[in-house]
Image (tube, one colour):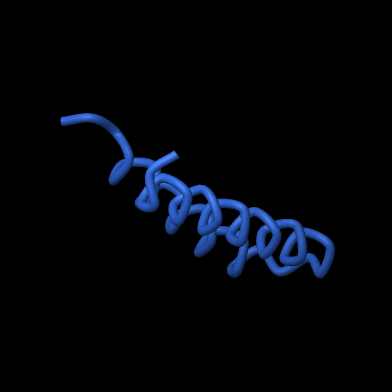
Length: 48
């Protein structure tokens, strides 16, 4: 596994953990912010 791929997967895991926390706290604004960041990371990982 390449370093950049490993770093990205860790970053995604971290964001998913934060999303779970935001959901458990009921913080909708934070959830939306985290989802936007995940979409950005996903778009960056897509082949061009």
